[in-house]
Length: 126
Image 1 (spheres, rainbow, N blue to C red):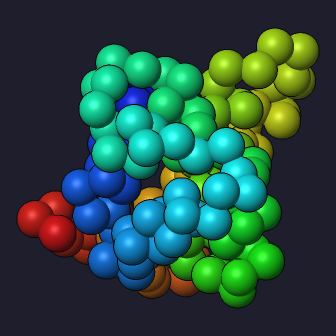
Image 2 (image 1 turned 180 degrees about the vertical axis):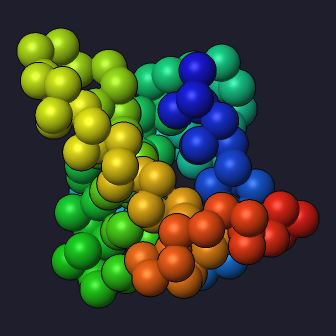
């Protein structure tokens, strides 16, 4: 499942703009539902652990602390998960959720995508 891969990527260091230590800080806060196995990836096949790492509680805590990059990452993952797994969404709502994660990824890999959407300029080795 892609959500587990997203969580694994974050545990391994995530995007360069995200400070993964802030997930540890969120765990130490104890206000959210983040658990130690979810933080460390002890149960590699656990969707529940991935959902806890990328939960609305963690998002709200990042927003409260002013950790914008981490909040953007969690919000993009939550929206993608919503668009992929939630029943009852319209095709347009699913499209918007998928477009949001695409734009988040392109912001990281191809910052000029808003003005020049030429994918041949993408640095594939990044």
